Length: 74
Image (spheres, rainbow, N blue to C red):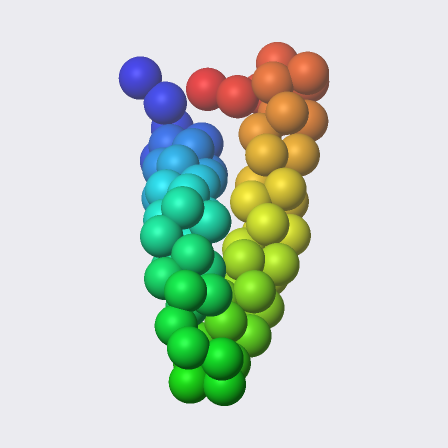
């Protein structure tokens, strides 16, 4: 069984990855399909959110990787 901190990192990475998948496969596509100028705010909002979440996901992934390499991921 994982320690709470390790479990929380994995769980958070999983949830962030799920949200990123939704943004890429649905939210950005839907906003782009709207008539020109109608949902430019939505497009920008999802692009910014995607970029921010990618950074956070990478931080969690690296944190988990470092723990695994040190043998401290328990």
